[in-house]
Length: 107
Image 1 (cartoon, one colour):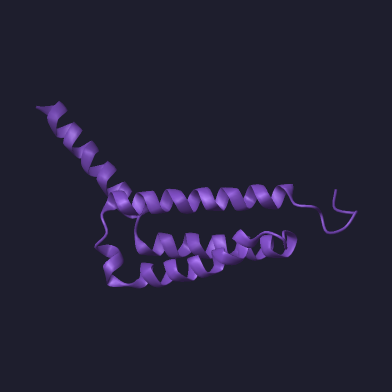
Image 2 (cartoon, rainbow, N blue to C red):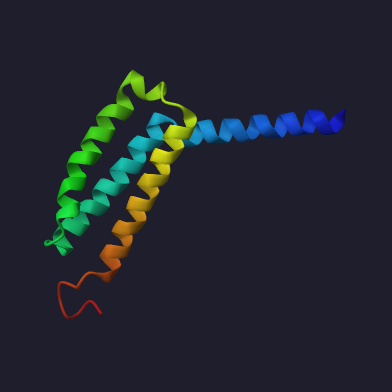
């Protein structure tokens, strides 16, 4: 009996944690962070057209995250979206690390 209660409590905690991870404010914070990284990448990687298109996508995502319809998306769908944003952030960080340094003093 205690095991069943413990497992239900653990499942409830996991569900609550996932709901917190996919709240609209988390997406807004993550898009702001990615936008800051994209601004830095736009300066250091001027030839990369993906960075330029990213600004429009981030603005669109910000608008969607603030709309009531975003809350109606399933948790799984929002988790996939969050994972995509995290991957984009990591790709931006990698591209910034591999970009040519603006001066010879920053080695």
